Image (cartoon, rainbow, N blue to C red):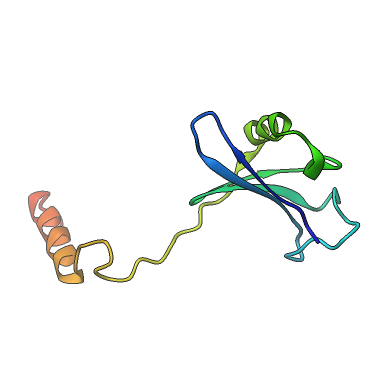
Length: 107
């Protein structure tokens, strides 16, 4: 089973740290595999660190925070927002776009 750690950075953001493999899970005994990466997740932000440091799950918090700084951003996942969930109805959004086009005299 893969380890799961949590660390809080200097800004107070709580990051969840876990290992990811191309197969979608890490099997026991495969920690640190060269194809795997370490994922740092906080809200919608994800960072990736590769290769995975050996015995990363046993590192002190200060070392995990240093790895967080080294980790690069991943592609952002877009969350689906149902119409009206953000307080704007589809009709209001359509009107806003129409007004924008009219103010810029766009077709």
